Amino acid sequence: MSTSKIGHPLRSRFARFARDPRGSISVLTVVTMVPFVVAAGTAVDMGRANRTIGLMQTAVDSAALAAAATQLSVTNSEGQTLSGNDAKTYAANQMVEANLPDEVKTTAEDPVVTIAGDVVTVDLEAEMATSFMKLVGLDTMSLSVSATAEATVKANGCIVALGPNGDGIEVGGTVDLEVDGCWLYSNKEGDKSIDVIGGAIVDVPGSCSVGSTSVSSNAQVHDKRYTNCHPIADPFAEWAPPVPPSSCDHNKFKKSSSGNDKTITLSPGRYCGGLQLSGYDYVDLEPGIYHVTSGALSINSKVTLTGEGVGFHIGADVSSVTINGDATVSLSAPTDGPMKDVLVSMDPLPSGTELDKNELISAKINGGSELGLSGTVYLPSAALDVSGNSTTLSVPTQIIAYSVKLSGTSALKVEVPVDEFGNPIGSEFMTIVRLIK
Image (cartoon, rainbow, N blue to C red; front, side, top):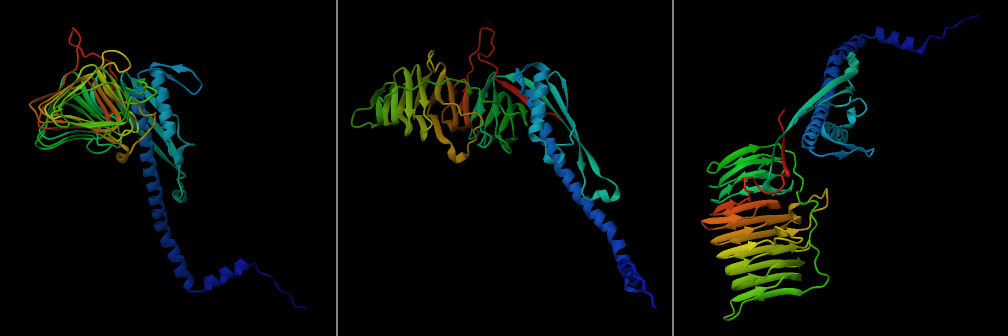
């Protein structure tokens, strides 16, 4: 009886492979390719690691800035009130948690927050699982990042650009800007957060910008310039704006002078559909609040525009703002009531609101030979242009808008009120916070 053996299928295949001379070439090819595969895989893992480190660095940068900027008490997720270094540490931890990349969310250690006075350092370490480097026995890569931020100065801010996506603060033409006792602050991100162009001269105690500061070759800036600053919160965020009357005093108010009628006096009230005035030599505003809802606010005077104790409150649906005096503009804010010390205002933007340039309203304030404004101009959703062509201009104690442009051929002086000891009057709402490492 004949017998037969059933061999293992793989054994037969390997036997044929060994007898085939082409097999030696195939083995050599595979062996030669292994280092290239490992090298390519290592490059992929290193690319992932570099990307993750970049995201981790953003997380600790934000954490250090947030911690250094925390000056008051905070309430944690459990309803506990934290103050001092506990509040700073909590702010840093929250920012790291919010920005931690997915690749290391489960492997990152708790951030180490070191606080030395106004200087905060945040260190973060994590392990990232590899994909290809496992072939050579490296299952994970250790990643570490660090950031240090400092709260350097507390100061009054008199010219503030709130918008991260706007044009920041621009000083152009041959403006000679002189500011005594307060700072410039711009929340604009990226290039030219503060931009000084042409033959402008800026003489201020200091400036702080989230993005970079640019100064053209013919311009001059005499100040302490800080960049990479923490965005400043809207100082009017909690301000209670005046409530307009329930009914309209005027509807689509629009007047132009005719004949010998060159003088007009306006009364406060609610101007529905806008307030437009042109062609008059003399425009006088009676004391009170001018509520402008919808339409446009446009006041143009050929000679003088005057008003004592006046305030303009602009509705969110107003399309543009123009206040212009070909010769002289002299306006002062109310000294009491809901618009105390506020000359021009809008409602504060809801927290977290971001606007694009095409959503901003245009606002222009111009004085020909003299511009005298006493009070705050607060236009959080406007691109504000203050200009003049005179020897001397004076502007209010604060200009706060989404973006601010100062232009013309004038000496522009911000006159900050001071107490009997020469200290600026008003709260120190600015804390200069910037990354130093």
